[in-house]
Image (cartoon, rainbow, N blue to C red):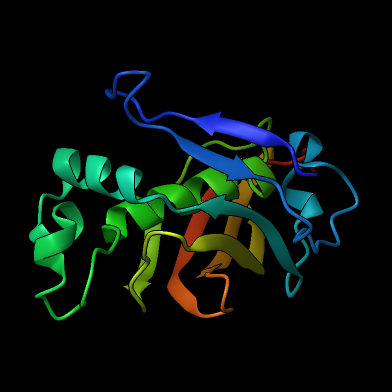
Length: 184
């Protein structure tokens, strides 16, 4: 049985908006150290890692959208049936938030992360619907140590969010700054 995490978004009452993230058997990774001990050197270019699952609930879709993306196909299930989507779908920003939770829990080092200057090529490829279960596939594209600050470097990753049918529903390229285990 997986480990249960309760995730809450800032600004929501504690009893109103929660996502339940279940660690599942989908944890296919070649990392030699756990996420809490990773540094830039632990991310090998070309390696592919698969992580987690997060359940997508109708109430969470509606609550997130009411607060941050109040379009009818995200907020009103009955009216959403009459849109091009044929039913309620999650906001792309909600999908990105769920991706970020899995990314932080399973991939991005908690001790070495220095933040991100941004993302590139963010694409929402298929709608995310109530009842979906999302997982991540992350490919390490490149690591590059800084010449001017040798205690850190840049990690570039290609992230795919995958539903339970193995469809890619979102993809993006992330750039993260990380500390190195040893400055050279």
